[in-house]
Each structure stands twice: as structure tokens, then as C-alpha cells.
Length: 520
Image 1 (cartoon, rainbow, N blue to C red):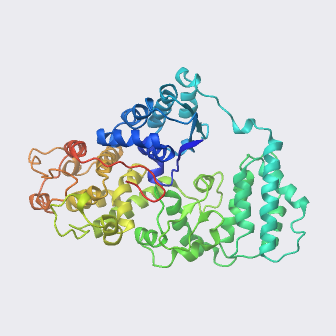
Image 2: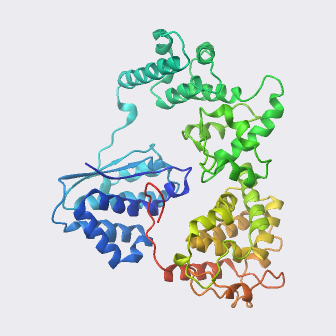
Image 3: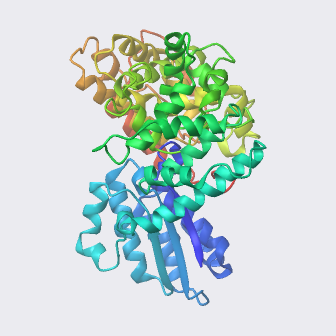
């Protein structure tokens, strides 16, 4: 029986966070079986800090110890971890795999763990180690007989193409089986090709499925092409549909930054938030993206983020050998630079003291009424995104960008504490540590170190820089002790990170796991 699952996604920050895997599994296991609920709940109350601890402690205190002596349990419990390669932290992925193998031996019931992943080196190498070999069995997708996969793709294409035909009031014989057979051959066992093809042909905004199918069938395959050649060709057709015959260059100049932003974002954003983040005219993004429903999930609900259907699309967009249209190609380092600058500009313009309008600034964050609503409406998703990800974009940015250095200087000397306040309200003080370290590393890589000492080096006068006694509290004292005065020294990266780690270790604990509705 399925006991718990976790689905990684590089495009959603929380779903690429290894530290949420075991808390999520513990939460779902507690819903799965009443005896599990009793034991896990007791251990969470006994060890509240375990939810924010290292992976080993999470596994031990939230799963192994609570369930080791459970009296009643099912015979078999299945855990599913999907798209493991979508997690960017290779070291933590390897650590998690070892801990999962440990759980197999320690729990009293038969535990089966089903993991799917691309065969990335750090994942393959870990499964080849003795500790994993003894408890795992690999099944390679490409080892499955191609005829089996092609048969399934044929059924999928036939079913959905005929559905499209019915919806468009077409002849019941469309499409001919011969056309389906050609498409199955071109899929080469890749379901993503079939899925994208159905979305492209059945686009209700275009309403010309017969014409689109004809265009695809007429585009002949060349010999010796890569396995992804058909997917790439399909993506090129989809992108071409967004460019009119006349004025394609001008449309491409407006479309490319929007596509590049969606591809490069580290957490999906709604349309209006994207417009605010990259400073484009309100209402300009959606019309440009409307022909791209085949590759982008664009909800009718404006509060829903725009999502990418499959990772193969950003892979295509960022590879000059695959995306051969220079007008639309996404250059990763360039656009990370642009997004880092957009984020810093958003913070420098919007951040101010007490944006959530908390009447009593000495109140603990957990006691602030409607905190999530205050953050969404008073701060805004685009500002919250910038607070959490400016440094992650900076880490991948061109290290010689002068505008970025200037934006960082302005941020460090005028907005640093406002930023820490928002992170505190988000319960994401850990982001501050990684962000400041990333900023320091970025400067070290950069060949231009002008005025670095005023931003990131230690100062003997910076001892009283901050008087935040506990980060779960938004205290006005730290604002009075350090206003945005250009004459005040800025704390060093090392000192500030130490303060933040201390604050994090003394703050109240909150179990964060992925649930159907929210994180907590």
C-alpha cells in the first residue's frame, strides 16, 4: 500500500528541497495509519527541533524511532520518490539515499521504496556503492522493449487525437491510423513527444488540428539525428506559432525576455507578479504567451503561477545546439544576471520597515493574525520571490556586471534589515545565510573588487550592528540601532552569518512539510 510520496521539481523551490522530504513522508505516514499517527505525533511533541534538523536527525526522530516499536502495522508500506534528479543539491541527495537504505533495515514492516530519476552521475554512483547495492535493484527505462512503449504511445495518441477530432466536430475517421503510426515512430519511445504533440494539435485557441497535424507530418526527419530531434522539432513548431509571418522579429524581441524569465525562475510566479518583477507593462505577458499552452500551464485563475509542463522544454530553450533560433535562445548566465538585477531593483524600490503593518512589533511571528495574507497582499509575491532568490540568481550571473554591483551596494547599505524582517516573517532566515555567502563568493569570482571592503569585510565598529534577540520576533530595536544611514558600517558576511545561525538555532521550531494545501 502507498504510504507516502514526494515529487521533486526543480521549478518549485519547496519541491526541490531535500530537507522537506522526511518531514513530508512522516506527515503522510501519520495519515496513512492510525498507529503511525500516534507514535509520530508523540515524537514531534518530544523533539520539536527535529523538524528543522539535519537529515539524519529527521529520519531518526520522525520516522525510525517512532515506527520501530509500533505494535500494529501493515505488512507492506510503499514510499514513492519521483524525479530525484530535479533536486539540485547533489550531496544531500546522496545522503538521503543512504538514510533511506538504513530505514529499510530498521523498520518492523516490509518497506519498499520506489525512486525514479534520470541517470545522473551522482545518483548512479551512489547506487553502485555497497551500502545501496545490497538493498536496491535498478530498472532502466530504455531496457524495456521499445515495442511495448511504442504500443502504449500509439494507444495514447489514438485516444487523444480522436478526442480532439470529436471536440472540433471533425469526421470520425480522423486521424487515419497511418498518420498515428508515423507519429508513434517519431516518438522513439518518448512520452513527452506524444504529450506535447497532443497539446499542440489540440490547442483550442488555434482550432486547426488537421492543419497542424499536416505541418508535423510534412516535416521530414533526417537520418542520424539525436533521440530528441523530434521533440526539438516539435518545440520549434510550437515557438514558431507564436511568431506572426509579418513582424516576427519585433514579436520575438518582446517574447524572448518573457520566455527566458519563465524558464529561469527558481519558483513559478503568476502573470502579474512576473510583470512586476521584470518591469513590463501590465497585461503584456499573457497575450504573448497565449500561443504556448502546449508547453506552458497557464491557468484562467490569475493567482495561479505559470508552470512548465516538462523539463525538456527549458533544456531545449537553453541549448544553442537544439534551439537554433537565436531570437528565442535563452543564455542562462545572461538571464540569471538580468533576473538578479530585477530582484535587487524590486527590493531596493519596495522594501521598507513593517510592510506587513504589524500593530505590535514585539509580537512573536506565530501570533501575528493572518500573517500569510499580510505577506501576500502587503508585500506581494514578486517581492517575496526577490527576497528569497536574488542571491541564487546572482550565483549564476555574469561576475563582471557593473549594474549588479551597484544594486548590491544600494541593497546592503539601505535595505538589508528590511530584507531580514521579511525573511523572518517567512520563517526563511536560513536563506539569509546562503544569500550572503553567495554574494561574497560572487564578488570573489569577480575581477573587480572596488569598494568590497565597505560591503563585506569585517569592521571593528560593527559589533553593535544588530540587536535582534530572536528572529521569530519583529523588534523595532534593531531599526533604531541601525537606520539606513550611509555612515554606519556594514557587518561582515562571516559575522552576520554567525548571528543568523545563532538566531536560527534558538528560534521556535515549526514542522515544514508538503501537504495538499500549504506548508507548515
